[in-house]
Structure formats: C-alpha cells, structure tokens
Length: 376
Image (cartoon, rainbow, N blue to C red):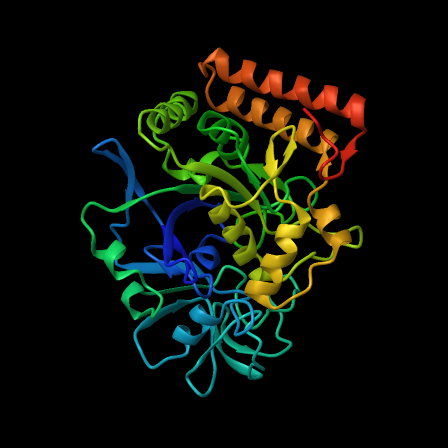
C-alpha cells in the first residue's frame, strides 16, 4: 500500500500493488517523493461500500541485491544508519559492516557470509567461485524508520481508500511498462491472472524461466484458483468507485538485452496512472487496454526525473506484440487448467475471446502494433 503524492495539486492517491518476488514490489512502495503505508500484504475490505486496504505489519522485508544509493536511495540510506536492521546472507566485513551484491560500494576482500569464512576468489565444492553475498540476501527493518511513511494511513484501523491497483510482473519482451485496464474484470483476467515472472536469483532453480504467478499471490491461495479469481472479480464489482487497474513491467529489454529505462522510471509510470485516475491524460487503445501518449510521458520524465525520454524508446517500449501476448494467454490457460480443473468456463471463454481479438488485430495491423495505430 502506498500513496502517489502530487504536491502541486495538494493531492494524495492511494495505490495497492502485487508483484512476484524480485519484480519491484518494495522499490515501488519506496519510490522517492511518494509515501509508503506498507510494502507487503494488504488486506482488502468493503467498508461502507468503499474499497479500502490496511497494512497490519510493522516492518518491511526485501531482497537487498542491487539496492544502492542511485536506484533505491531511501532504502539504502536506512540500511546504513545506526539503527536495528536484520541482514541475512550478506557479507560481514572485517569492519563489521554489511556488504551485498549491487551495493555500489567496494566490498572488502574477506569476511563472513553464507559460505562461512570467505575471501575473494574462494570456490565451493563444485569449483564455482563464491560471490561477496548470496543472490537472495535480504533485509528487514521497521517501517516507522522511514521519513516517507504515511503515518495517517499506517496507523488507521479502517485503512485507506484505494483508487488504483498495480499488478507488476517481469518479462523482457511482452508487457509494456504501464497499461490501464478498461474495467475491473479486465484488470483481474488480463492483468492479475496473466501475471508472470522470469526467474531470478531470488527464486529457486534456473534463472530466466518464465513462470505464471496469478495475482502474485500463489503461495497464499489456499482454495481453488478459479474460485479465487472469481472472488477477486466479485469483490471489486461490489463496491462504489471501483479502483482502476494497471499492469507494470519494469524489465523490458532492447534487442541487445539492455534495460530501456532507469529503475526510477517507475515514478513516471505511477504518476501517469495517478493522472488517469483523475482524468488528466488521454490514452491510446491496445487489444488489452490503454497506454500513455508520448507527449505526456515526455513531460513526466522531465518533471519527475529531469530526464529526456526519446520517442524511439517510447515506441519500442509501448509497441503491442501480438504473438507474444497470444503465447502469454495460452500459458495462462494451461496453468489454470493444471491448477484447477474446475475453473469456471467463463474464464477460459474470456481468454479465448481475448486471443481472437489479438489475432484479428495481428491480421489487420501486423504482429507488432505501434502506439496509436490500433483502432479497435
């Protein structure tokens, strides 16, 4: 749970987000200039016909790899303060300080880590060199350490009124950085249920494997997945002012395998979503939702990051890739069929209709549809 803050408009908009491991959950909750209520589990309730969410946890817990002064300044600052923090699987140097992968600080040549006594160049029993720290090293600390905590939302027993939901996965070639769903049901079935994550060092097994992760919540779904999905649809449709649903993907890469934007670009995607909630931006249609116009993003990049945003980068990032999306939906269908043989037929019919719509778009516009070209 977090709040997008627009000081110029004296406005605060509450969002909830669901991201699989290593897909940007904590860094989204900690975007500089915004406010955090909690970085983990949010409980939804219909209170007086309002969609409200509450954080019941007192701390935050995250992957520490690549947390550094440039990409995650607020978290990084607190990790180095003289205050209580739990570090796991990092290197403890001779100076008794923690060091981790991607820290942006030169690590010592020796110390103690998950391997035991460690020194630079040491190898394990299989002959592999042991790094400074484990790829799944973590940190845990109190939320009220943070200067950007939203105290009213954090302490409220009734939670906060949610106006936007973010579903973020990880893929290098399919999902655009931010896309709005036309309605709540589309949001659940095309954004939440189709969520995927390419495996990283934070997950067990080989890296680079794309796995389905509906709602980024599979570890906590304790009853049939189809029923759980239908309950998500019914809950959102049962409140007044249903939140807008957006998808995120911070991990699109170019043809050479390079990321297309900095990690802080998520601030731009968030503020575009905030503007859409408040009817401030127009959008282009795609077969699966609505995407930003270049002119709006150009202004947002300059305003929030002080950066230029090349139009060719925009076009690459927000091109709709038909075949990739059809494959994504087929993987989702197969996963639901495997996980819950009694998944309601209407869910599969919805995805079949979506595939038919994308197939028709592919025949009309080509496999890759540039922003603004799709006309429904």
